[in-house]
Every structure is written in C-alpha cells, then in structure tokens.
Image (cartoon, rainbow, N blue to C red):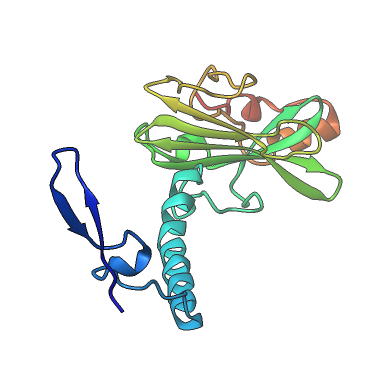
Length: 197
C-alpha cells in the first residue's frame, strides 16, 4: 500500500511526498541475474573475437613471410654455394649470382655439424634491401636473434647484439670448392675464381 508523509518546508508550506525507499522508484526495471545461456553467449562472443584477432597478432610478430621465395628451405640444396667458418663447411642458398640485385626472398646459411646441417642465418630481402636477419644468439638458441632493418639501417628498438652486416647477399664459392679445400688443404685455381663479386 502506498504511504505518504507531510512535512513543513522552510517557507512554512506543507508538502506531500512519497517515501524515499526503493519501492518508490517504479520506473527502474528489476535486475535479473545472468542466466547460463547469457554467460555462454558472452563466452562465445569473446572466443570468436580472439579467433579473428589471432591472425593479426601472428602477422605482426612473424619476422618474415614463410611464403616468400627460399624462406622455408630446411636443408641446403645441391646448388648451394660454399664458404668456411674456422675450417667448418658452410653452405649458402641461393647464391648471389643466381638472383638479381632487386631480389625479394631469403638467403639461408647452414653450418655442418657432423652428418647434419644446422641453419644459423636467414636474411630476408625486399627488392634487394635487407629487412630482417635471423641469426643464432648463442649455442642453445639457433635463430634466436631477430634484427630488423629500415633503409639500410637498424630499425628502432632492436636487441643490443644486432648490427648492420657489411654486405647484403653473402658471396660464396662454387659448390664443392670449399669442401674439397677443407679435405685437401688447398683450393684449385678454378675454385678461387668462383668467388662471387
């Protein structure tokens, strides 16, 4: 039942008012607790939003496009060029002479570890300009160091160990030349002139 009270205002007039308890606010709709169906709907919306955002974060964090030429090669092909690191055979693909100066794609280097090959350097180029360089941070983190470049210089906020390499695409000797030199201790003249310029 509705109840009223009277009071005297400062002007001496009597005023009538409703009680100021929660029952007087007739326009406010009662709040209903969230049902299990509503909770499931909210969870589904959140899940779907995460799915749509995942590709965005993946693209932003990926250091180089895997679909770019020569960026997904796991082992050195037969036509890989050769070099040496402290008398250890290194293979590089593709050779500088096999691609143009405006090459877009990766150049990968592997070092021989017994009977296997370990990938220790991947450089990604766009139109001949180095964009990203993945190299080994230490013995336990192959390709753990990611360095990014812009206009031939290190991009902002790069790891302290990053630096700009002296050249772009690595120069190599012809296939088989360095392997033979390591075995025999000498390099044939034809192999010596096979070093790319």
